[in-house]
Length: 263
Image 1: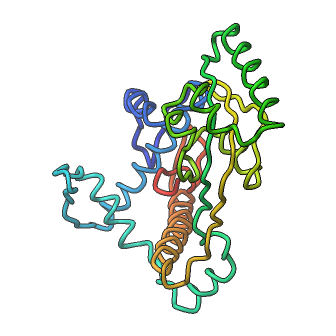
Image 2: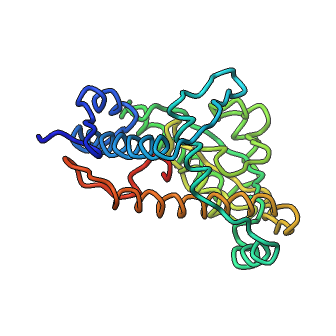
């Protein structure tokens, strides 16, 4: 494998090996290439910062950790060379109007459930849980008013003492399988058996509270931050692409989007 160089400066295999840990990948070769590209970009930025005699103080974060001198140089170079215009009010409002669905509060669900607990890796126990849940579902098909009683008597969840009540549930509060089944229900519906890593559930939706549209004023700063970040990323890619095009890089193919600065 030929050595990797940036304007005559060699990126050592030892440095690449140390950097690989920062780039989880599907295979060692992919991780090695990602780490190499990152180090090439970093070396290129450091060379440019020194050429331009960038002078910047090292920052200390809220935990007292101080950035390295090289990190400060890279940051200072990007801050100096990559200009990011601030979006005006018209641009912010236009983004809001074009993306209304992004600014809606999550829907909430009030639900009860019955859990027949079983481990997925215990085939016999899980099969028995399926059978028990199916039997209870058959009972509820003709007597849905017995849900709370059956939850108290049969559920393996601490919510059994509350008749199976889980209170209000939002996105991410439950497993993906449970959430998908819950969203598909109409108020008053009882699900068919739903399998999760905890066992087999029967779910009853009692109330759905639909999300509401947030006003522009409530999300203005979020939009502004997003647009600045988006434009910053694009401008940084363009700047790095320009530097790469002007540099003598050997041993690896690279472009401006290879830097962790724009991931």
